[in-house]
Length: 237
Image 1 (cartoon, rainbow, N blue to C red):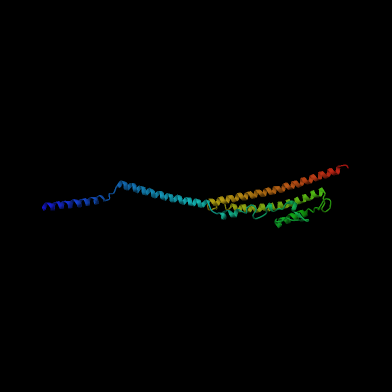
Image 2 (cartoon, rainbow, N blue to C red):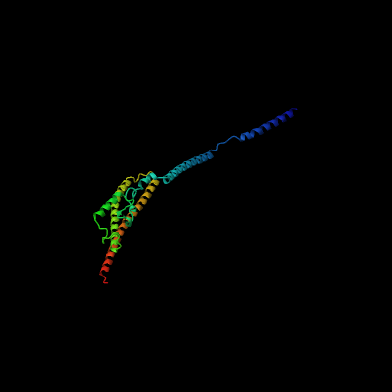
């Protein structure tokens, strides 16, 4: 009986010990080396994230600086060339200036038209060399073409002189705004607008030169007519 009790107690103790051992194995153990590595990794990751945030901010600011509408920066430059005054394109073709004996300058400014008309009237020119109205003589036609050219070139000179003064003032005012754009997009748009205005100004120069060529053409036409008439007068029939 006593031996049976001892055996039962031994079994109970063994069972209790087996139950305790796994619990002892679950106790956490701190590995200082692994902890240091993990902490360093976490710190490095945090720095990388901060760096990425800085890069993202820079990218967003750069994108903002090179995209979008900057009309307020470049808009003030759009009238430098011809927006506020005379333009060669407003001068009608020289052949169309006289309409029914009256100078018609179309959309050209009234002050320029008036100055050109006063100039041509001040010359007190005859209507035709032969004195005939609607004459078909070559000399009369050549004379009329020359008179139209003088009228047109007079308007061109007056308008161009006016435009030079207006353009100078506009360019000086534009120069005061250089460097005031808020970002690179504003500067780029300003520069692009200046290039456009430069092209328009060059086009005005071409128009003025074309007027000079027309003047030489009319003069050559007049000389050619005089030579032809002289040849006819010297021909014996």
